[in-house]
Image (cartoon, rainbow, N blue to C red; front, side):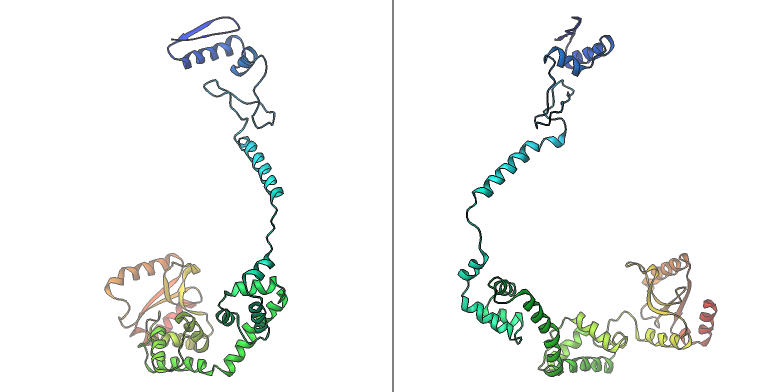
Length: 343
């Protein structure tokens, strides 16, 4: 049995468990003596001295459910003592630090000064790129740059000017004077695609070119494709294999552009421009969507459900919708129907 006695009136509370005794004493103190447990314990057990927070802030701590005093007034006060100790230790370490790292001495001692001067001299001639100097002196480009600047062989301003010259002016001269063959490769690939429609894609066309010519194309196929698009436009997609749009769709695009030249016509349209939306073949004036089935080649039976979903989605978003096949796209009445939808 557990037992607690009220130190104000002497009433005893005896139960099997101590928590029942505390609960009854707590209720007795509130009803009979109008005093809280905290005030009772401070007055009759701690001689009127309320426990304070260990962090030194001076705030009173509270009592937990087991009638034990917390060590800190708030959770945020717990780390104050440790933070102060850490700050003091850090200050002592800084005061005790005697060796200061000298980066200039590091480069002077680690690398040959003659190597540093020669590499900087080569760079200042504006005839070597950083990559070429890196290979020549067997040092990383970033190491060369930092070494020159720290040893005051080249200023930051000089480095920026020479780098800009090498990147733009010199590279442009090399393309115009020495690398005319690079322009020839674009013409070769374009001719290859045009004379063999739907046979090559950009990657296989580059491979074909590299097998026949001494000058090799080392450019990434996607970068090469983007440059080809800038030079020759949509013809690249028209003649290359695995393009998103078929040759017939590009031909129908020219028909639309001829008859509706005053209207806005998009090839490959997404409603709202969202990334994962359906892609429709044509859109005119942002209100009429046209799906083109290229003679049954691209829209097989297994795609019928998807085609129905695309049509439903277009109508739900307020668009007019027309589906054409190869034969109907050659019918003049279809153009009249399109014109009717736009009015």
